Length: 254
Image (cartoon, rainbow, N blue to C red; front, side, top):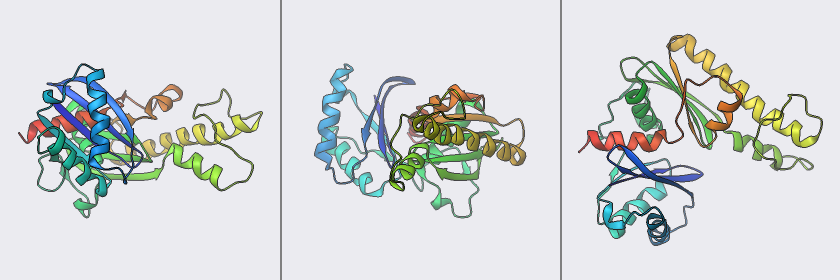
């Protein structure tokens, strides 16, 4: 089985694949001070809950935007699974041509998302990934990564609002029934959630003018289902797109 590990700024997403089938997925908090043994113990306890034995893991693929944790998880793989992981980076086949001013500047997760989306849906594509930032990526019909845009994420925007004011508080990230809030909670939800949805829709319109109106729009990340409930901007929603992309890239590099 393949263990796919997506190390993000806020969460570490993990998924176990048996061939193309996803056996299970988990999310852990990103904590750069944790040691390989700590994350390893988490995994050793999580796997049996899904009837997966550590000995079932015979391959690992990693993409990371948190350099200190890349080595942590590499060591975890060798210590606990006796496997040398495939770490997405320079020299790894992805099936995507990167047309960026400096290809090394593109986050590994963005290329992994592009590889998965292109394989699953074909191009041209616009991928919107709701993580710590909200990231927009454009992929051409010829599997070319054209570039993208980076905006503050939904939770980052809400936390910034709370941290910079005296009387506003944290609220649940759900869309209110109306844009005009009748109380402070609904007013914050309207501004943060509905405002974010409008930003996404506006950016997608701009991207389509440049990529082409036929471009399919893919939503991914933990917040994508929330946005999809309130907007028809997405053609497809795939919360585990990055993990699927890691499986695809692993197969390309076997």
